Length: 171
Image 1: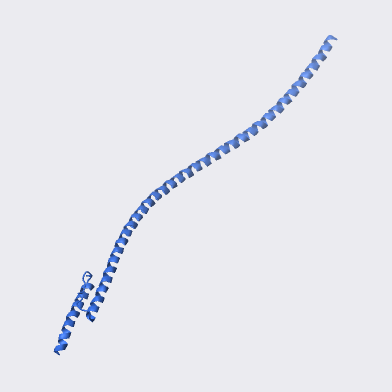
Image 2 (image 1 turned 90 degrees about the vertical axis):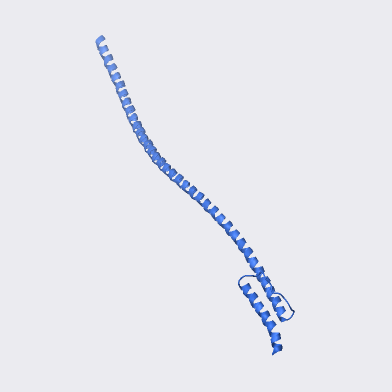
């Protein structure tokens, strides 16, 4: 029994050290290592645990670095998002200005269309009046020609009567 106790007590002490160490690792402390005091199974177990701790520490550091990178990327994304938002405000203002200009042009086009219709109506009225004036002018010319012909005939008749009266007066 004494021999078993002599062998068991150091193993129990070493196992308690390993359990306490693993509890520290569980709480996030990966800065320590187990002391390797022998090359037996307990020494190999301690070496394997130390390698696992080193791997865990490497992964934690890598994750921390990635977190910093992600954080930096997030800040960049935030800045880009803010820049896009500012550009969207500029685009929104440009769209509003364009819309206002289009409304103004549309109103001007409507006014031009109304004015064009008024001008077309006035030109049509002038055309009708010009045709009417031309018709009246032709009528007046025809009447003037009729008056001229009647005047010519009246003159001819008056001359004939004059000559006839003169012949009768002198004969």
